[in-house]
Length: 269
Ligand SMILES: [Zn+2]
Image (cartoon, rainbow, N blue to C red):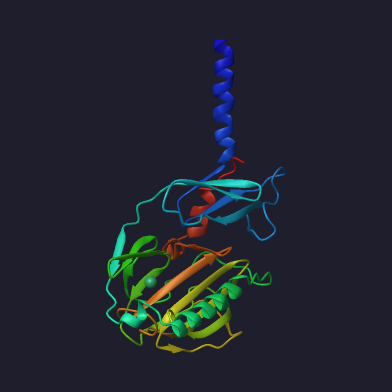
């Protein structure tokens, strides 16, 4: 009888382990070393060759709480992280409670962004070692709970870098410009495709100095910091997407980030 209970407990723990093969922090990237058993997780996963091994590079989606996210054949246990909160005041009421025409416009623009995020370019291979797109002061980090005029809003899934109007914004990594717009929320906005599902975007610019389909190299000028769209002051709102998930841009700025990522790779599927 005792043995039977032990066996049940063992199976129970085993099934928990199987339920969450991978562990990650919201907004971070995880690397999985591929082997004969798992040589492909999903058609659109970013796979990197390094020292004769192949690694799948996956985003851990944002979540405010502990959760398990199922992605095709694997699941990720997302561990809750306290990102803190950010409270901003927007005094222009038409920027908070949108008129019908503004809200229609914002919706149409959100569809353009969604469409661009479906771009999956295979002829450019992304680098995961980014440089900062602008010199300035970090004014709001990734993951913060956001309150606008004391009302809770969606979390801030980007990095804000404050700098004076006109400060140069450069490409943190090479890629192709896949969207250029002047949007209600984001102001002067561009989206840069780094290849294989890694995409970055730049909001609130005062000037855009690239055009659609421009190919840019790491360090090339993209435009200038501004305060277009819904802002409280001049800054760059910088988002990075991997497989359509918004990830923490700051992680990509760590020195030798790819090496760190591969060293911490998980292979326990
Ligand atoms: Zn922001």
